[in-house]
Image (cartoon, rainbow, N blue to C red):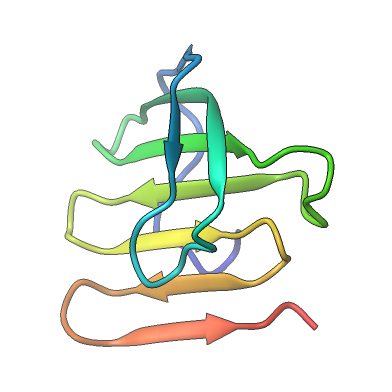
Length: 93
């Protein structure tokens, strides 16, 4: 989480939404949103459950008020886009 410019503190509720991940940092797998909210900086986040086969049980997504976004993916990889054309990917291996 150190490469994000956002804080995970703040509002949050639980959700039982389902969907498929989107964006360059996603895995394309189906997931269930286990919690989501907006923190005190106005950044949206959601925790995602990809099921028991995911190697990273702490998957989440941030969509920040400055246009940047961050994925922590179920395969252990991470993806950050700064909202201004720059991005960073880590395979997690």
